[in-house]
Length: 548
Ligand code: ADP
Image (cartoon, rainbow, N blue to C red; front, side, top):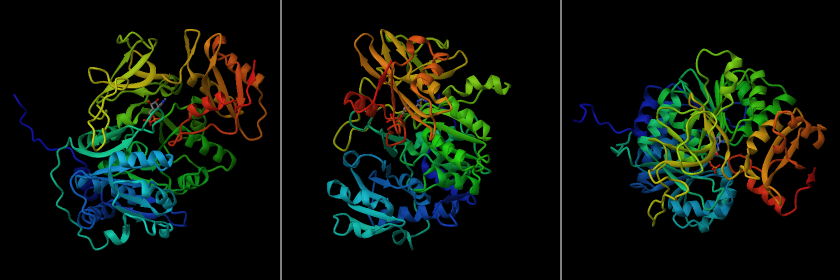
């Protein structure tokens, strides 16, 4: 028999209405670079989102599931777009402003975006693309920037503030199917064309609830979260919607993402939480080591998107800031795991749990698949590819305006699980430890070497700022590790010293023979180590390699 419960669709509209009323006093604070940041209550943001929805419908004719893209920093207007666009039934499409221009063009055309809302400071990036954007009819500009860059462009240009001024403060929000599209993000296309993941209202609603559970980020209206992770990187890890559910105050850095302004923001505004990839925390650590600032308001920091080096976690412990490791993907909305140790442990006992990728929440089922396709036990030793499924995990990629959605064999199993491409082990008590991405693992003489393990060990050396290890071809072993190292300013460690440092921690046969000092590790558009670039630099003979 069916249940006797009400069948109420789980939609972003409900999140908007809830946040702007029940949590109307919570705030979105946006850094402006001026003495005073911009401060707006959730009630204001909700009302402005409602006026934006009216403007998009009445002035720009946005209808049905049309795509409205954003090319924006993290700020209050971007949150307004996050709430308005899905709630009116259209599809929000945040664009990654660090992608190469040709990829942005490809993505906008593939998604068939009809409107782009852009920050004025990003017009130098947008303007030259416009002649190539086949479906864009309107550009809406918000914040400071040179409007003359859009002179003579084909799409109609609107001023954000003028557009939403004098619009009604109510909207007859449609009753949406919770399975319908609310937002989309493209993977950053490290291999092949970018792939579009389309989130539903239901997936966003359930994911937001999970973000707010104590076993995940566990925040409420007494907290302020510093959202460093860009709103174009997997929906800022779900924060702009999760915050409206429980009234978490938001601190938005806008374009001030350099370590010095971030440190100032933290000291002045005292956020209790923050979220960003490891490279941001590496940069901030170097900054506060040189120019001390009080970061200790941040009781917890969510760090993920790439493996967190244990040495980084240790350094922040000393500053009174607890980094909590999380794993996820564009395809997983992104929350997949978070590393809160089990209850009742001493700090020493907690440590081995904290450096794992963490535990799966109830909404994410996981399995490990071995080389022969067999399901592996959770014994902390059997390493295989991680596969996941659940209500906020992608089941296919967007096929584009003309095409069917698609499920490539290397990304989805026959029985519908997402193949993550990540290799790891799961302990008997359910903690995931990733050893590598399948494409980064070093296959040396039939054995596997984890590039992440070597990097973590190297980054524990006091002279090392960053280290990236990649596989390079080797006549005898097929592949061997190449260690590329960035030394801290003024540091003097040489290869002999670094090799000796590793020798105590890593099996001898895994020690790299090839070494190169580099000025900086190349980064992807979302700030992860770009190993593809290092492999190419090596192949092209651009690195000054020392061989032992
Ligand atoms: P891209 O694949 O383009 O980098 P995503 O942001 O979707 O875009 O990346 C997801 C991948 O990032 C995961 O499959 C995994 O390899 C890596 N990743 C994310 N979080 C972690 C983590 N905590 N530890 C190790 N790797 C991580």
